[in-house]
Image: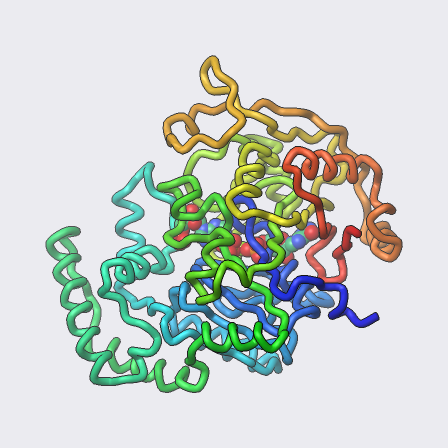
Length: 438
Ligand code: GDP
Ligand code: IMO
Ligand code: MG
């Protein structure tokens, strides 16, 4: 049977169900063998997705994680914010490695400029404890300009007259904002940036087009589409841990606005769940493991940011948060990743509820002050022995039932508590270290 026939719905979406870095890139790469298109719909180069194939590590920030399959069309949707300098260097990097880029970039996606990057850092510092600890890639300021309707879109870079008209206005506005609001000089050369970005437009012209039109036509023609989420549910600007969020909608519903497809075009929605939890950036995390256990998870799981290299804060699976992610995204199934990292622990705590003062909470509170004071109520599950690479190689050949019973019990507990089945289990960073659950 061909691999393509194992993937039933015509469109599938892969979403981060926690705080980002769940292993979306790995799962997307694994599923790409079954699809014709991989389409990103939000975020920018704040994302860092890692794909490992035969020992070669590929790090992706803007280019979709389907890039390793030359026949797959990879698409950047209108809901994204794009730093053309980063995109061009990522494209060059993959071309140097010998990959052919079958890339389409939405003409409606917004452009990140150097002043967005400068502002990102200044604003986050100004916010102090209310800041998210951004990746400083200019994401928030670029989305803010989009919402204020000052934004410059990819298509504008292709028309010198329009670009100049918009850029002059935006640049002068930023210069004044820097001076009046932040008391700082914006030491950037207007003409140089204008010329540089015009040149980026020339280099990217061939790839820029109408994403909604092409993706809808592809769906009508029976092609298979994978929508690639970036960040995670708790970083969603509406449904996440606001204000410690990113500036886009990261949840499943965002695919409709971020690509231009109707809700009736959405098939399966897979939520990627790390077998524990990590978060890079600021804000309260009820199940954060501080001290030795936190350090153990970070070192064992190599939890360092793909984009910024920052150490990730680690902790335990939070079912209050996961049930919320299932509801907000309408998850059809879960892909559990990094379960190998937990091997060798005597027991593993999983948060089932929160204690807030004298009350017990089963739903995620919106009030930041409540979240800050929530204490998780844990159920402790028995651990399993540490497995070697060769143990896993044998298990992968045999399939899901060959996994240690306690490991399966741990995953079953998560599936039962979230009322969501598990479709995939990842037991290593390599593409081949993946097990389908029937
Ligand atoms: P993403 O942003 O969701 O794509 O995740 P990242 O790539 O930022 O972080 C996930 C990290 O875990 C990467 O270094 C992956 O190579 C690695 N990884 C993914 N799945 C597994 C797994 O099952 N086991 C182990 N040990 N590492 C994994
Ligand atoms: P992937 O796709 C983890 C976090 C930042 C910060 C907050 C806002 O690899 O899962 P931003 O630069 O977006 O304004 O930062 O969001 N953040 C991520 N954390 N993984 C990511 O992407 C992230 N993208 C943004 O650390 O707390
Ligand atoms: Mg990442």
